[in-house]
Each structure stands twice: as structure tokens, then as C-alpha cells.
Length: 472
Image (tube, rainbow, N blue to C red; front, side):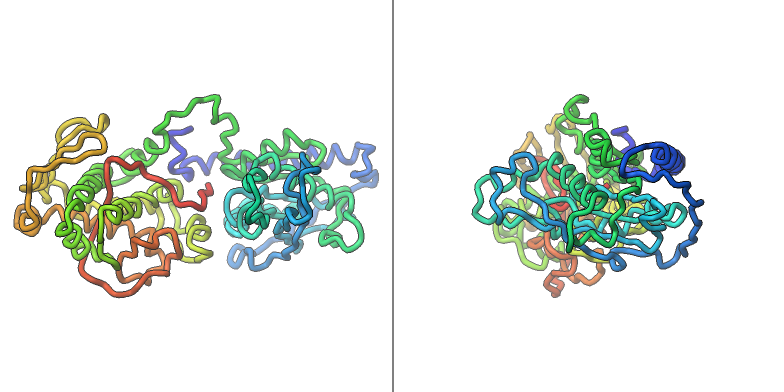
């Protein structure tokens, strides 16, 4: 599974068929069971056949069509005595009822177990729920995960303020929400219009959200009748003892031919990190890189070089995880403050194509030694750099040699890699220079004057993902 999770789309055709089949079986089972049950949540009356409502593929509803409600939740469902009134928070919930057959017909509820991003991201990209809701006459509900999006407790100054951020508490939120929907939550409840005591609930989720769906069905079988959990490695940690460098291995796979990328991509990225770190040791080198890479702000210190290196490494995980075969804003929506700009199809391959626009042979690049052991030498024309774990030593090349006919290739490689990363950072297409100081901000929040040209990062830092999430 780990070898295939970089490009999840490769397993979608089989998974989709299985999920559709499972959905039909689950709903059929719940219809039969509920009709035979003596529970107060079910009906003894014969059910009328479900109407088939065809929704147009174009213009499918999105977060813009939600009825938004806010549900009061405690900070802790399991230590209620420790809760203070001010620690309760409002959980944001999207409800879409245009396909629903209604409570009287016990129309099913499709419930998305929100994961680590604003819930809008999942509303706009969870196609299976939208596709099947008309066929089953389902009520659609997406619940936002606590501490994400707008469902954040106000805990400024509170000790251990992240103690409520657990999957157990999130599952309890979902259980309380659905119980209120089914049993009624008193007069004035925001859920009253959808009071559905007899409706079966099918949970949906993907990635961490899929894990929540699976756990939800296990932990609260009295609340949820079935679940469809996609890409949900509930036994991944710690039972399989994943390697410490597991995420780095997945990134390498995505940047290599096995992942569909250009043959020299992975090596080009690694060499660029070495060059950036070494050339950035001197003020003259930093100035030259600032100009050649087209940075919005020049590099002033070695700390700036480390920040630039992080800038060049940070998106790699998101690009590998989000390397779908179609254009989508699934990941950029959450990361770049709700942008609707889409990454291109196979964005990691696109990055690699740009990064290798000049071949390593044309740039006169050679690498000797063991990259795996992080002990190797990089030669670019007249420039030589020796790497020993997190240290680099060079052959005393001069700044002038970097602009010579035999040394300018080092700057060209840096430019190629920096430009390639704009697949991510300039997804909106409105940046005119490389805004390396603000790489965790909005995709469109760059200054807008273009100095000169390119860029990359070092062997001592491992790639890291952007702070908001990967949905997968």
C-alpha cells in the first residue's frame, strides 16, 4: 500500500467500484434491518420505493450551496467536570437537503467525518457522496473537525490548549451531532429542520477522515449504520512500524521514473540543495543567487538561505500527495486560504519536467559517492562540493567562477528548480517574483517586482509538508 499511496488515483478505478457496491449493500442492509427492528429509530410501516433523482453533472453543488449550522460542543466529552463554559466551541456543519426524501420516508443520511482541513475542502471534492445522494434520496452532512477551519475553541492563555485535539474527541463530536439529529435536541436547536429519528446513517471519509469513519463505525455502532472508508490505514501506526524516513521514500518515489517523473528529477533536486547551501555561505554568493533566481527579497544571511531551502522543500509532500491525473484545487484550497486556482494534472511530474529543462549532462553535473549515506561529491563544471551529512566543503571556487562559462550551470540549475516550484507557489499565476519569505501565506500575497532569475535547498534538512494538511 505504501508504494502506491503517492499517486492514489492509480487505485481509484477498482476502489470506486468496490465502494459503490459496498454502498448499495450497506443501504440495502440498513433498510432491511431497520424495517425489522423494534427500535424507536425505525419504522414498522412499508417503505415506498426510493425515487431516482438525476442531478446534472455540470454545476454540481459545492460549499456555496450548504445550509451552514453551528453545533455547540464541549472541549472534552470525557472529562466534562474539567470543562469551563468558555471552553465550549461552535462546530461548523454543512447540510444539503435538496436530494433528501425526508424524515417521514426515512431517507438515509450520508455523513462525512471531517478531517484535518476546513470542511469546505471535502465538500467540494467528495464526489461519491454527491453522485449517490440523488439515487438514494440522501441528506448530506459534512462536519468540520474540531480545531480546524472555523471550528476552533477559543483557548488563548489556556494551559494544555491542544489537549482537546484528539480523534476520540472528534468522534464524540460526530456522535453527539448525529444523536441530536436523530433524537431531537430541544426547541430552538439548529438541527430541528432535519430531525430524522428513523434514517440510517452511512459515514464517509478519506485518508485520516477515512480512519475516522472506520473508527466511528467500530466505536459508535448505535449511531452509524455503515461506513465507506477510503485510503484509511487504521493499522498503519504503530503496528507496522513505518520507517523513520518513510515520507522521504514516498517523495523520492514520486520524483523518479517509477512515479512517472523525469529520470533526473530526484537527483536535480538533491544537487540543487547542496549548491544552495554551499554558495549561500558568502555574501557575494547570496547576492548572486538572489539575482539569478529572481527572489522578491535578497538573501541577507545564512539563516535566510535555510529559509529559502525550506521554501524549496516544503511543497514536495503536498505535490506528491496531490499528484492526481486531473486539475484540482483539493489541496491548494486549504493551504492557500480558499483559492480556487487548480494544480495541473500530475503536478509532481510537471515540477520535474520544469526542474530538468536542462539535462544534468548539458549542465556538466556529476555526482560521486553515496547519496544514501549522505557522503558524496557534486561537481558542476569547475565547481566542486563535498557533502558529509550536514556539512559541505568546496574547492575554493570564487564568485567569479559562478558566472564563468564553466560555472554558470550551478546557477542555472538553481533557477530551474526554483522556477519549477512555482507550480505550487504561483498556482494563481499572479506572482512576478519568488516570494520565499512568505511561503506559508496566500498564493497571491507576493511582492511584485522581478529582479533577475532562479533557486533550491540542502542535504541536512528533510522535506517537510505545509502546515495545513493533506487531504488525501
